[in-house]
Image 1 (cartoon, rainbow, N blue to C red):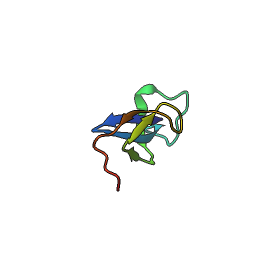
Image 2: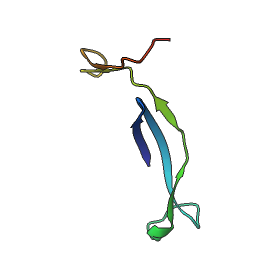
Image 3: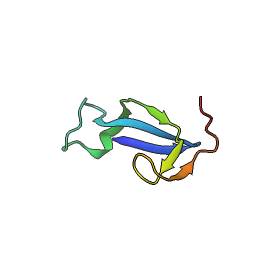
Amino acid sequence: MLSFSYLDGKIYFRCHQVVNQEETMFKESDDVEKLVLIEIGPRMCLTPVKFFKESLGGEALWQNPEFITP
C-alpha cells in the first residue's frame, strides 16, 4: 500500500505491507482482525517548488514562496 500525505508544505510518501500478525504473508482466507500494516520503505519527502499548466512546462499555476534555490 502506498500512502501520500501533505503536511507542513511537504509531500510524504510511505510504503506499507499488509501482513498477518501470526504469519509472514497475507492470504485472502486470513481473519481481518489479525491483519496489520508494516512500513517496508522506502520513505520519501518532497518539497514542491512549482506546478505547471502542462506536463513539462507552460504557465506556472502555483509557486512555493518559501523555496530558496540552493
